[in-house]
Length: 149
Image (cartoon, rainbow, N blue to C red; front, top):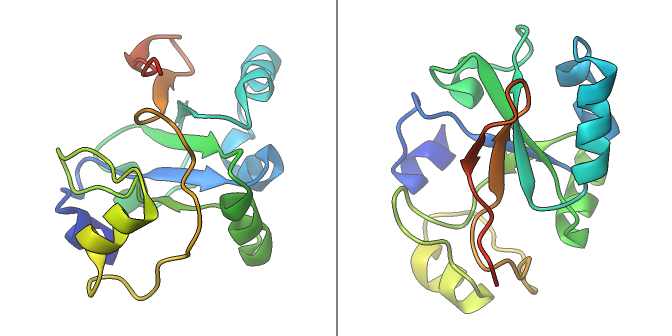
């Protein structure tokens, strides 16, 4: 809930979970069709977030007021290491406040969030030009297109 406060984000919006491997999302993917699993495998790891039908696995503050949960497998080595150490997915903070652009460098993260978070991991960010693409897995609808570099 602290992430929601720092990001100034409504609990109704939900949050994105990010993992280091698709296996870490096993409980979320149990009821998917084989072609849906293949689509995830072809897109991950990478900057694509899928809205996956929730079947009671995710808590309300993660799902928000939606019937889906937002999942992404990251290609970023630090995210992969964190998820490996913790043994599962973490919340993607996107390093921004609600409605604001994401910080694109370590110094911007420090400038925006210093004193509000317990720790900032030093090092390069993911290098993306913008936020991850968001696709509804059930319909194929692109809700947030990828940003061209």
